[in-house]
Length: 526
Image: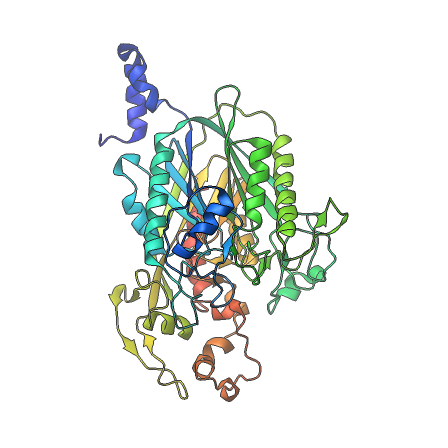
């Protein structure tokens, strides 16, 4: 490979084209180029192989041991079959300023160390400047973090499956690079008003509900009794530059947990994004990519109602029909918005990007320290650090009655944040499930961007991110008592808030740390 940057090679190729007859310059034609790729990452265990073939009419490659623990709700929820496949769906965009790859996984989350493995597997010849691996955070796929095994102290991870996904994503990116062709891109931002019926007290008719009102939210949003949601549907459409300008990919960004089927479902499914993608592909062609946004604390579809056009009534909640109606309505809103845009121009958007790695986040969660100590969390991804240096070992620092509970030592965990611009659109890449209130802060920093995307659970999954002013420390403070089954002895009892927002949270310093790095990046890319 040449050591010259691609931009210099393009200039050289253009200057030399008359002498070369133009044939050798096809690969380096200037302008925005894009490619897409897709891989089936459905977990197939020996006991589910027949179910996969029955569901999809073809044999599946066994890539997971038995059982397949489903992530996102409680422990010991085992997959019994399949409704639809899980995918890695990717696009690569190359233009003046760099080459960006975005791959969305139908998974609950993916650790930064695994993302780094993927980056190492991507061919050097692909020359990807910045790779984003995003998890949709759907709740009916395999446990890829470890905390949803048979019980809280048994990991649900299968490392062979992680290896399979890593190889699949890397080969997907390489394929997208190999298929780069001249393209054009355009954007649309739609609003969620009317995407739900507003029948539930928590449903404001925006297609997503806030099911965890925190302290102070009522002051911020008195009109909705403290409910704060991000109702924006933001889309990026990539189309071929040559006639008939076929759609290559449509990326949709929305802030809602893909968990409409609820905890009772045991069929593997990507949830309502499956129907969003099917509808967009049927209407626009190409490949649809779903990317979840600022869905933390707790934005989702479990407390909304959607009108079923077949019955004229609200679709039954926790059903695939609900997921189909909801997903189709989201897709139609995006399609309608894109249809109203003016024809694409021939301008080439500039690409820019910036990252910070590592970002050291203080680990205050005693449950996470316990899970690291006993190997529940991904042992390939849970190195802790003190003063920037990796440390290992155990201690027993919790007070009685839990002074026997092992805790991994080390002050911080390491993660990363990133941001990039593609023409008139700005993208923030966060390792968290961030509160829409924080999302609004980030969007305000995307100066000069007409369209604003937030990629949550991007390149890592470290849990919830909420304003530190809303922190409730009772869950972490009572961890020793809770694990010892003596929570009534904790000084905070009975006012212990161990809702998932606090239980699955690194600690109060998450937002100050992440925002302290993220906001300067967004400003840098103005």
